Amino acid sequence: MTRRNILATGCATAGLAGLSLPSVAAAKEALSFGLTPVFLTNDLILLERLQSYLGRATGRAVRLVQRRTYQEITALLQSGRLDAAWICGYPFIRYRDQLRLLALPIWKGRPYYQSYLIVDAASSASGIEDLQGGIHAFSDPDSNSGYLVTAALLATRGMRPANFFAKTFFTYGHRNVVRAVSSGLAQSGSVDGYVWEVLRETEPDLTTGTRILRRSEWLGFPPIAGPATPRDAAGTARLAQALLDMADDENGREILSLLRLDGFERHGAGIFDTIAQKVEEVRNLG
Image 1 (cartoon, rainbow, N blue to C red):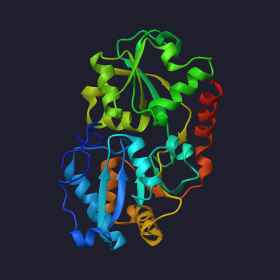
Image 2 (image 1 turned 180 degrees about the vertical axis):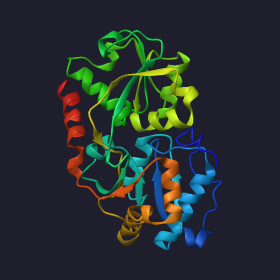
Image 3 (image 1 turned 135 degrees about the vertical axis):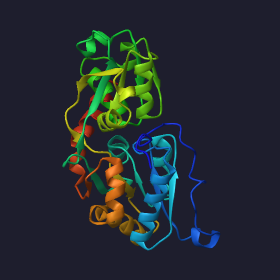
């Protein structure tokens, strides 16, 4: 299994039809786990390993569900059609009354990450003010690191992305933001720092075409969330526990190694207070 495809693309299939799925009868009892662009990958072997691990750890058939946008996965969670999903801190804050926090990934020993504002490696920009009037690539309108952080930074200056940049567009994948900037499609971009750092290891030819202009403060890592009123409370609890136990399992550690994560931990929703503040900064601009 190669590591070059981890977090590889925002152009994932609508589902995981290529993976082995339970029988029609068993599927009615299967647990469903959603994956957003935080995780998106073309490595079917990794996805099969994750599905196999979760199935073994929970004692239930597990169906992995991928969608292109955060909005699609969040809507499935809200409607109770998913038992759990790896989402982002921004939609968690927006819909916190309808969601509950199950676990947080641990990266480099902490449940935190940063948003990176990146530019072309040859750019002479020294601050965000130098990006005014340029083309900017965002990841997803519901992404904290790929949209909200930059929008909030501009809001504190009394500006919106549409007024500050000459043009903005969404790539629907953090890797695609890096690709857009490194290829010259955009002069700057907002990207998940965890994804950029993993790509720096796995696809250095891609990240060397970019430069980090600004790192945000440390923010709560994209969480594993479940619906506030789960359709299968016992099943959701089993999924959460399987993730919390992953670092203690040999196969689980292999998956974590590929994802460059240390494991998963329980945390209170207060870890997203800084993200909630950014939501208010954008909202207060009107």
